[in-house]
Image 1: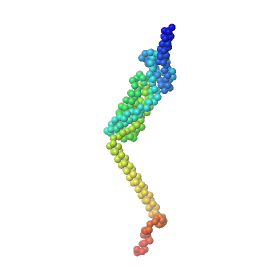
Image 2: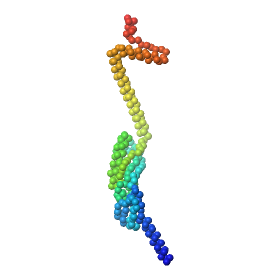
Image 3: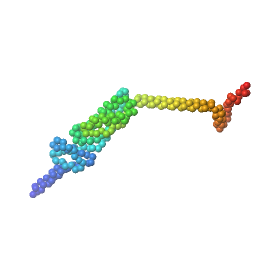
Image 4: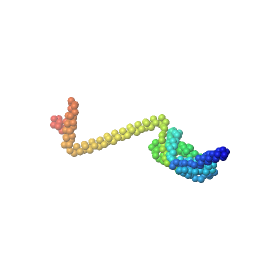
Length: 248
């Protein structure tokens, strides 16, 4: 009788182990790729999944967007400037079956592919293009990565070049170039201002030449402005018309 009870408990224990092995629970963002005796049976989930013990096994696949940091890469641009560039890649699994059977580790494969693609693409552009056309380069990287990861069931949604480290000598040269550009713009603006002022003065002189009375009014206005200052000495210029009789 004792042997029978111990055997019954053993069967219950084995049944409990098989039950734990056969029942799986998947979250909303997870899928389970089922293999039956080595053959893929498809993806299941989310929710409660029941497997045949010792016959079926399950591989969990996360469908959420993955943020992958690409480590800094040594890049030589088309104009022979050595750079260190890192990026961030956003991707997610859209076909769990292919992500499991087409590639051994889709996370590692996507990371290595992003590194080589970053070096290849940035090596074909010049430094000025890399600094000024960041959006176009990001789009090109995203298109290339998405095309190459599509057989793995992975969708690359976005790629962002995050940081560009320039050599110290290049930073100094760019600082000098920016300073020279600011000086050039300041001189151009000053020259434009002088040109506009001279044009306005020329127009004013032409108007005053047609109306001598306006010239006299301007002369009186200038005297009024000078008298309001705190100067102790005021030099008053006299028109030539007033002193011509005395000169004769």
